[in-house]
Image (cartoon, rainbow, N blue to C red; front, side, top):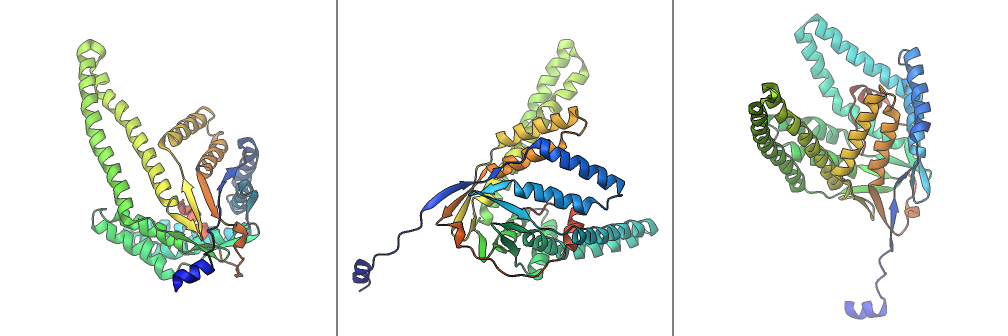
Length: 354
């Protein structure tokens, strides 16, 4: 019967897939002017202007991210961010004061802050996504507070008691929580990377670090000894192993960063639309080396140029395979979201970017 119906009513053809690349049009010189003004005003106002600086920076970067001919927008309220920053300063100041009074009080205050951290991260994710939009449609985060405590507190503590063996599992669970609970309009993201893939990535990292480190250490020691015997000094023999191992470890780190980035985004979808990431360790190496040299030789003035180059590389390694049309997404109504978590997370230097 079903075969007869299929002949009478042919199944709908799958939607056509088009490749849309992320394009970042910001320039280092433009961002330098924003950055230097933000820096000077933040210093003059003793940090108060940092909330406005953050909004200006985000608005500039978001407006220069283009996908399928449209750009993103940032809607964060500086006053809301400032309130979050002030409360974050009060929390960190309370910790420093308690630590000054007694180690026990400092330890107790640290426990209070650790207990608050999942809630702050949860609020920060809500704020960051609610204040981001594309084509006039806002992003959102529906993850529960219980999920935040499980992924940001319970699992990391359990990982400590397993001497880190649980960490790849924790990393996978955190990314799954962030991605599957995020939405664009009424369309949710999904994440299907397996725990085994994270263990494989971390396993390769450990093998390369330990195995390669031992091999290069032995080779460096032999080479150093030969240099010493050749009359080039005993110090040369001691320095050679470090000269070989340090750049090797950096290359391994960049390779791991590229593998994790590709693993996460190659297993993330927005509704029927799939992401593809093609980051390479060679690209990261070129970026980090040139950015570091630029910052050293300009005494830090190259920082905004380095920031633009980094964002540009990360974004332009990512493609969205659009199945059908992005116009099928509808907006969802939602109230304002407080910026308390966002301010404290900024102070702690925690990167919550998806």
